[in-house]
Amino acid sequence: MTDRIHTPVAKAIQGVLWLFSILYGVVVRALVLIYKFRLAPSCRLGKPVISIGNITLGGVGKTPLVECVVRFLKDKGLEPVVLIRGYGADKQVGSDEAKLLEESLPGIPVLVGANRVKNARDFLTRNAADVFVLDDGFQHWRLRRDLDIVAINATNPFGNRHLLPRGILREPLSALRRADIFVLTKTEIDSYLVELAKSKLKILHPAALIVKTVHQPLHFTALTNSKTIFDLLSLKGKTVCALCSIGDPDSFVKMLSGLDLEVRHSFSFLDHHVYTQKDIQGVMDFCRAQQVGTLVTTEKDAVKLRQFAGSFDNSISVFVLKIQIDIVDGKEDFLKRLLKAGRV
Image (cartoon, rainbow, N blue to C red; front, side):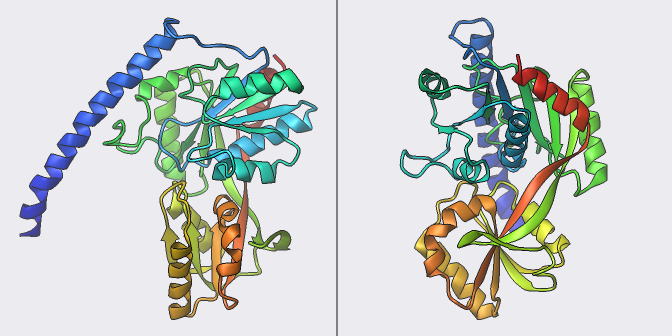
């Protein structure tokens, strides 16, 4: 009986989403053509630009990849600058990704704002830079770049292959032909899915370099003091709750389980969620009721949760899992391409 009631409703909703996906696709294709035929101005900064983006909604692990690229360029003697839009950011607060990059890359300028061309040009009038790293830049057609890197979640590369809002694609798959490099992320989760994604990408764009990466847990830190480090074995066997607002919360929970933590419950909020005191109170109430004394969150969430550090019950310890992205296949070619683009 339930199926008979909900199936027509579900079909109606699907039809509406399908219609909006068509309209969205028309707009996206029109924008691509407008910039392709120079009907709208696109520009160069006079400095190399390396774009790191994706073709789907969040959850690909793009921020750790940006950090990896910037560190490499810096280690090679270049002066990189990050350009980031800062979703949901205001001038005082900034976005969670921007805050995380600022903390993880001390001394590296992170310019936040929707008008990334203006931000870069204003910066160059007062400062020196060798290369700009454009975060979430694959759909930022206004700014020309010297290298286009597209990060792809190997466990769910294209969703249902439909455009927003029916699916998770931000552009048609044919747009991937603009990419120079594909970086497969989270390849440690399922080797079969990795090979499947790799074969699809080779069909879509045979000339592009395909790089495989893993998300590698490093250690835990305390929420209140990121310099207080705990090794990965320090929480082994503990019953914990997970707290995150990221695009792919399941991968975070799997990573915790892989570290021999028993995850009693995962508090998963929408990506870019702005935490409130009510959220924190709800988490604490659950932990107390379940007698769970350990809460684990992500680095991205930690930058937003620190303002609530004093609100957590003394009986609840809050830890942050530090991760890094490691290249396990295609590293030499990838780094060569980065260096070449950075020195154009």
